[in-house]
Length: 190
Image 1 (tube, rainbow, N blue to C red):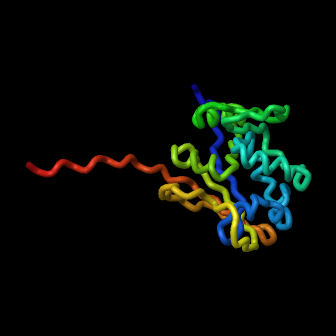
Image 2: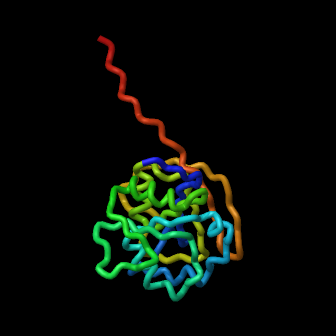
Image 3: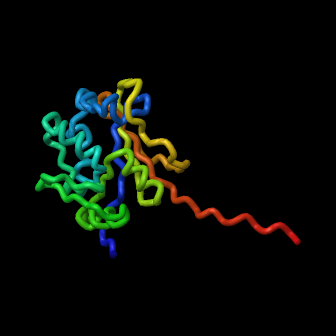
């Protein structure tokens, strides 16, 4: 598949100061106590499509009344099991993650593709499919919940390139450094 998008693949996260992206029971209502879609409008304006994990999609559906203005472009949900009663505003994908990224990037055009969901983001990071990570750090300690990354993600080096504060919210931006392939150890001298 040819990818004609010039936008970036961006993992987009809201995080408590103690490293959680959702509270116990996947609660995320604490987010809207500190920020709305208008807090950083430039991010929304740069986003042409979103690729969302199924769990995050379900949580978002339950929360849609709390933040109905979030408009990140076309929405794609990567899942093993599409719902029996699909949402007409969402494209459900059951393909490989690289195919899903390519389809969503084409839809995003010259804008960014936003990745939402801890497991989906980790899969994209493992495969080297992410260009940037954008994190909104909120002034709250949750104590428990869903961590920023699931266990088992190897080290990934990042290059900070921006931070901005709006009220109590700090937005941090990082480029994902491309890892050089590890070369095999040289054979011992004979």
